[in-house]
Image 1: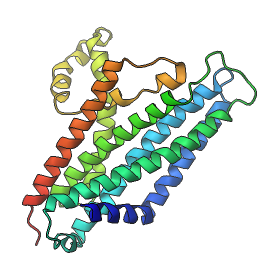
Image 2: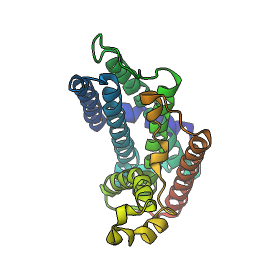
Image 3: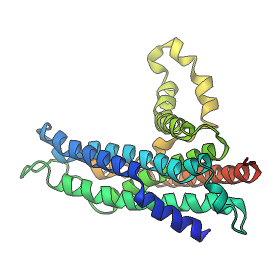
Length: 266
């Protein structure tokens, strides 16, 4: 398993498509800096909000492209057959690849997090906000939440790659999964408050209730209100979000390993 992890790390660092995503991440952080210039009262808060959204998008794209490069394309080109000649269970290949992707995502999270924090510190010039942003622990715990978010998306993409015969399917469905998981919490809350009396929208409530049993609420991993406004999330809710993410990712990787073990390559 360790050899698969290390090979995933090396291949991920050399991937050309990842260089494009990294440029996108840098551009999004640059947009965060520019957005602060258009906010006369809370420039650092605006830069942090836009920047965290940019990091989330970048990490999700990183996760999907790395799974596509390290698993999907190897299956498509049948180069995965060389890896399967090792005298180890097939599941070790996928788990090793997944752990390698998690390590790469952690590195990307740290680098983009450092870059964003430098941007936030230099936003607004000498202007002093009435509600300063919170550095240190709250900020980095928020980055950890974004990393967990991307880890769940990577697990889903890995599962799709383990059973798909269409090369781009993990990427397409992964994007839909990331968007749906992020918006699920807001939709459920809106419906729980009556949808402003709109009966047509309230008809969707039973469907959303069913979806909540299948799709994880990734918005529970977004703790940006803490570094932005000093509003600490409820400890129980935070722990529940972490357990949900870890459990869901573990389930997806397990399903991927089982599917991949039973898959026949011709």
